[in-house]
Amino acid sequence: MSKKLFVGSLSWNTDDRSLRAAFSPHGEITEAIVITDRDSGRSRGFGFVTFADGQAAEKAAAALNQTELDGRTIRVDVAQEKDRDRDRDRGGYGRQGGGGGRW
Image (cartoon, rainbow, N blue to C red):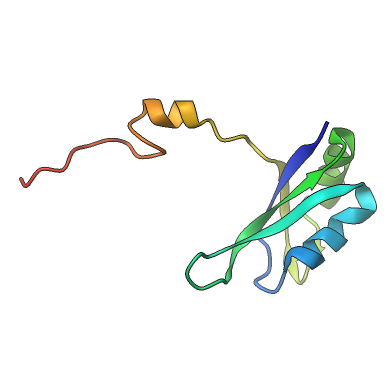
């Protein structure tokens, strides 16, 4: 079963290809993506790597957490799934509710 890893503290120079290259020695990767700003296209400093095998992902996370990639020490954790129902119950996708009003 596949497993997704969160990779934080990425260098602004890290792209999808270099992220994949860093993680590929640890197992089969189905997706490696650096998250970019919608407007500027610049990296937001984090990304995700999805492994075909969950055990390979766990080993990669342990091996690569707090190591250097493109001049930066990266943080690697197992990604948490978004719980959209929980967000909806709080008043809408991550907002804390609150009303408009003029006063």
